[in-house]
Image (cartoon, rainbow, N blue to C red; front, side):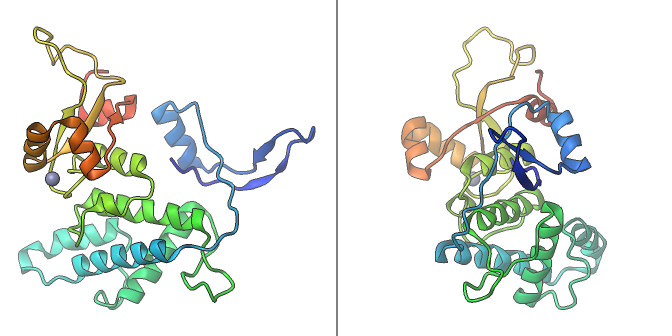
Length: 247
Ligand SMILES: [Zn+2]
């Protein structure tokens, strides 16, 4: 989970660090999800890797293909709404990958309250590895939230698999192929328990389409997790509410 904030310095006793800023949106998120733990990212200055750069370009390529695909007239209004939600409505040439990349980078930097960065190691403001990871997670969430079809399994592009899986559960997307998914329980639910009345908080789940659910049934959970380098997601209150499941 990323809460945009800025490392400001040491606490007066020199024993700790403090974050100077947590914006209103982050505060609302913390309240809504009743989050009590946070993680501090220390940006170590190493520039992004070639693999990260390739992943970002691949994701931007898929987003560009999605927003520039010709549509029947009847779908245009919905498409305009999607573009607005993606904050890409004002991209002049929607077939231009570079223009789309600049637009999504601007949106990400504004949402994260950080300076604009470049992907070129030669530039003075090249993204560091931590920022690149956060940017990849942001692009993956855009794809998952809007059901953007991608040219390869998104899980292979996820550097933070836990965060990616969380977004897949919240949006009911198959974490392997991106199709519409059902949420499957990883822990066995014993016979005789009424699923509608049972509590789901803390339960482990995976979002899987019918095909991948069938595959999991055939080869078993452990082999399935190894094949796709998968983990499961533990349901928190926010996910239970999003799914409409009893907490
Ligand atoms: Zn699938």
